[in-house]
Length: 101
Image 1 (tube, one colour):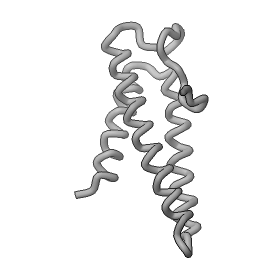
Image 2 (spheres, one colour; image 1 turned 135 degrees about the vertical axis):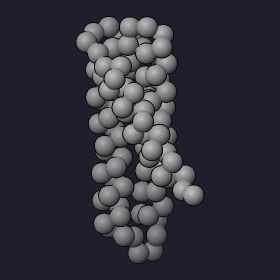
Image 3 (spheres, helix red, strand yellow; image 1 turned 30 degrees about the vertical axis):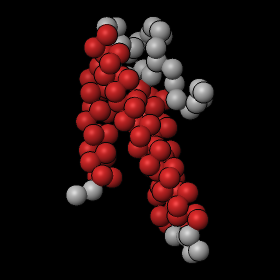
């Protein structure tokens, strides 16, 4: 099923789109990382809302984090190879953060 919030980067030519297989692989890799973080935010929102006394501030922070992921997915569509690499590094760090010690 296609998620309309997740841009389809394959087969699209234009400024900032990857022009070789390496760039496509990098794009797909960072897209998967962003989706993984977005799924984590969605699950945390669900859990927090299900509590008997949900923390509204935490929910707001989680919703903002989820929104940032969606915005990053949209921006990634026109990203340069360097911007894709930067996004990958940022999301690697986020994945480490949510994984914990």
